[in-house]
Length: 477
Image (cartoon, rainbow, N blue to C red; front, side, top):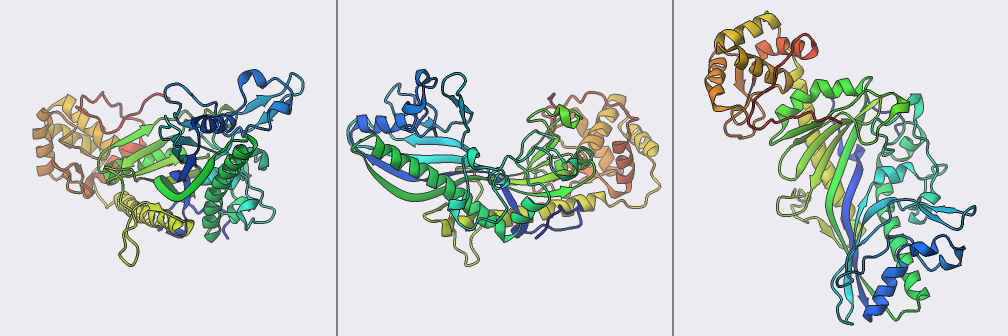
């Protein structure tokens, strides 16, 4: 099993079996609670944290509460969703405080209306991060049973923020697998076992607490579970080692913008040292690649870049999961784990195909053809053809920053300039425009080396671009 990251090389191909998943949003089954309304309300009460005026009291009032959820909102019809607790909980009198960690997932317990005594139907909608889950387990020996996995942080090993070779996350979050023992324990087929154990453990904890609360509260409540797993969103990723992740993101941004079908956006990054981390800030670029599919590339740590394919499966514009090898279409729901895991595996296969297409596209655009055209000659030629200093500067700005020009983005008075550049052989229709109308333009191979030199140079100062709808922006952190 691998213990080190592969180096970033756009000539390589990724495989679905080596993928990992980050955030997954899904519905973990349906529960029918049959009983009187006051019994259901009591179960909602005891599935949450104790009332605030009890939390400073000695612990005899606590055992009846599961502490999985925040206090329920009983306004209106009393059937509002209950939110999983996300922060630490302090319990006990001063000097005897106990800290209860939050579970390693987010989401809601949703209820249908129960105005009468006929009961209610509930759904457990969760957001799970299998990478964070995997990083938190004890890997002295690889667990083989779901019961050996923990889903409450008090069950976890306290992993340090830093990894080997002084590796640290640029966004301050520990949803990454350090090289070494944990990477070896979560690679290949072992990852899929980790994934299923993660789902099962969350479900097991919820059902255990629901049954315990129902019994301990002495309520006449009948529980009926209907297994139905509904996948809503999935992030599939691969990571690669590189010496300067920030520089790499800057270097490939024009290629990703050109690969994008609809839109692209970036987040800026301040170069911070390890002791100056700012949560949520990292250099990244996100592009649209078809209905319900995005690619996000970002500098995860100071030594790795993450390529992530995000699938949104919610109707009406959600991604359609590819059919099985037998041509069967399964949608994004299942009634058992044996049918659910293959859904994520088919998404991993689509993610691998998307990323391999992107890698081939980047490699093709990075291939420089021998050319006598110098950067100065390119700038002079553009100025001569456009014959307008402001427009020439804007066109050069977009070619250097975005790697492409689009009639949909530029004002109408730029169209004669684009036509002149196309006739002169400086521009050509974008190879990856995928039927866009009107088609965007990119530089012809003869001029790409000169553009690349300008892209890597800090000598050119670009003016503001008065476009109708910029495709890419750099907001302040």
